[in-house]
Image (cartoon, rainbow, N blue to C red; front, side):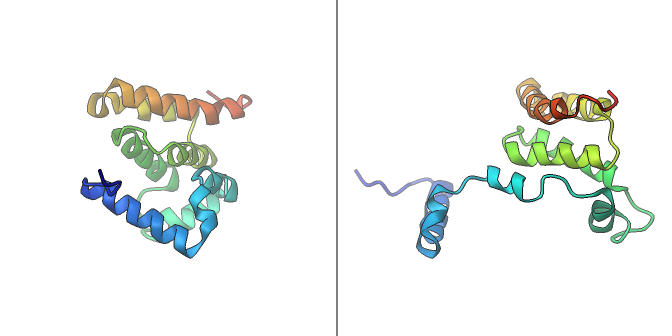
Length: 136
């Protein structure tokens, strides 16, 4: 039996992995967790420039955009651990309270299901547990 994937998605992933390995053999052992260490939290001003005020001066602020992003990540099943943790960190930096983060994730249980909500809450707690001195 061939080790070539039959599923189109698996085939695409294998091709991407082979290409990355050919370009840089160290990529074979790459972990997305490294992204979190590169820029753990953007300053609020940078987030406002990139995601808020510059794009649409009268639009959503960075905190709201990040809470919406967190809702979307939860609806996707909270499968992207690093993305959920980074979004929570950035939301806190943008002024979101822990309660707002918990409510955002909790509200998504209606759309994403209890397992996705639970996973997102676990990931958020990893970050919020690091910030015990902040408001609930």
